[in-house]
Length: 576
View 1 (cartoon, rainbow, N blue to C red):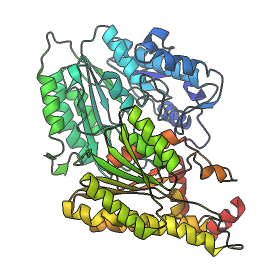
View 2: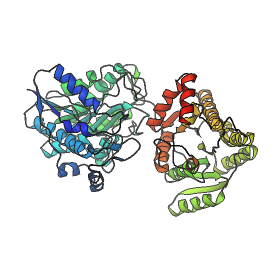
View 3: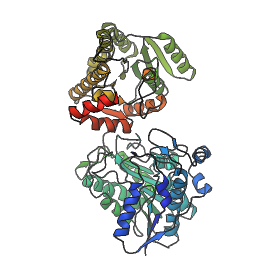
């Protein structure tokens, strides 16, 4: 039998940006290769639009209305996800192509199908477009398969990023088994081994979170030793694959070292009863297997046992996953909590049941914050603290540590900016920056560190900046102060490696705040405070050693770090 390939030029009309990594050139190059080197038994199929009912089988009315209102317009949905005038039409056609591929296989017209689709889909949640994705193509395809008579659908996702959207669509269900191997911790922050499904769906989500720098051998172990046994137990009628190839060693964003990723994945579909096949990024490989009568609870138990064993099990002498703990923070101290990121983090952790000591010089906003938290069942205690007074800061933090029975989390967030132009520099400005950003931050962390070491638990977090990576023009003082904090935390992290005290350094890009509101220059990829807080909170829960965001700014700055001084100096002068 043949392989159906779905491609439509309309998918090229989605143009999120000239420098955006999810580019129309992806499909153009694939199509060019296929035309120059034709494959046997391949039939190109005409794509169609997804119907409103097919889209609504996965997505909320609110999201559908939001995206439809942007037909013919350019818009940015979040820092990563943009729409051009042709994006909506492309997304509807991509989702329809995924459904068409399912229909071809389930009708017997093809043994397998391959979808050359964009925009991609596996990050799109039922009520939210995100991560380059508008509609969740593979989830829509799975729903279509069930509507066409499949009883059990397996979704295999090997994209370097976890498919949070696909997981969310089926997290409480047992008719769809979701299996994902991905880099972790990494965007979007989901996909821990402990995420197994919920209610009736417990055990039907199997995540294999890998640390960076894994190769073909590790991926092969995941496919053969984990996914294949669970797949046998599940006995799917259809396999769908979210075939993102960004785990390849040449990908500029992912940090994996894979050479031939589908080698292991092919075995999952080829060795399960009924045949094999694959497809592409936003949709995927799928394979039609013979329908089996009856159903068993065994796949749920197998998935649960295997997923829970990920942290301890050595697969082919490789760790299949990191030992991931989501700490239970009972008591946290956050400095600079009267506004911006500090205030946002205080609320974020209070909502999760943490008793937060919110510290800052200005008491009025802290009291309002405390009252608002109390009204919603949270607990935020206002603390008057000026970190520029390092001795007093240490005394206060140690008193709080005694009072609460031990701080589990300390976030050194307080910081100030200020122009420090080399031609007109004032020591008073530099001195003030050092007192708050350097001495104050170090005092905040050192106040409780010896106690955390003695207790053998705790988490220190410092809020640095992407500006720490190079000396920014007219902001030498600020850049240097944040560079100090980053290097200080790095040294502590190395020293504390043998303890249970975690260390995290966070490098935000531009975030809307009182401090950035004073900037007179253009701030690319400016984030809303709520968005930044959500990303930072998840990074802290993951105990990431270093977290820089958004990816556009951090990637650019990592490249700038490598520039020779002569080139950097010239560029910096022109930008200023």
